[in-house]
Image 1 (tube, rainbow, N blue to C red):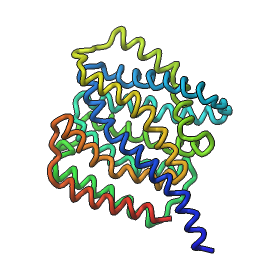
Image 2 (image 1 turned 90 degrees about the vertical axis):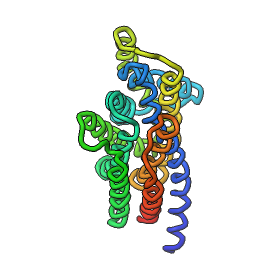
Image 3 (image 1 turned 30 degrees about the vertical axis):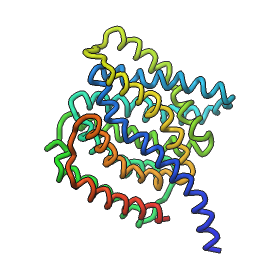
Image 4 (image 1 turned 180 degrees about the vertical axis):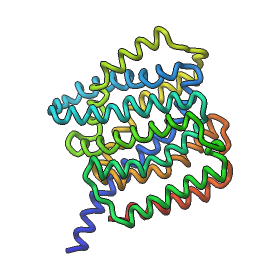
Length: 298
């Protein structure tokens, strides 16, 4: 009987792992893309303009699929999702990356899985085991140690780090609430409706910033970065991510993001000429072991 229960659990979790991994891959380029975008575009425009573009895509998707309208209680929860991942995380990271590197921003991403697990308990009603918390903490320590050794943490706490910490709290809240809500609406509809809920705010702010904002050097790389965070980071990536959280559990699948900082450093080296150093390989191995342990823990 217990073996049958384990088989059922694996059949439920495996699709979540695959979808969650696709989401992590998509999100891993978000910070480098944001860094490219804010080099030539006003950070407020990047933060809210991306949500407008994604919101337009969301409206088209919802109409094309004939998605039913959420209930009143679901709309209130969608407002929480919108605050966390549509407004909070993009705004705080855009402002922080004006002065900080994408590699530095990856330090904050290392804290995201642990924060997501906490909100999974508070908002999604999940109860991870002690083994889970031990493996999650081990992965977090490995990633933070990696940044200290390589100098990825920038050599000390800076004012922009407050923005990055705020981004992590907002994002973790949006992940946990969205992952739980995706069990009812589905991953694609959850992010789409959250984008629609935020449209009145995002359109208004974008219009004001476009009129009075600072656009120093809008080049091809800035447009590419803006296009990526609009279409992938804010839209398509969440299709897979929220579906993965709903199927595999917010806390469990959220730990896949322990691998995201290493991927972010890879993209930063390739696209931004930021050099994280050789210890990335060792850190990646430790992180993957910890991720595997979190997936085996009940």
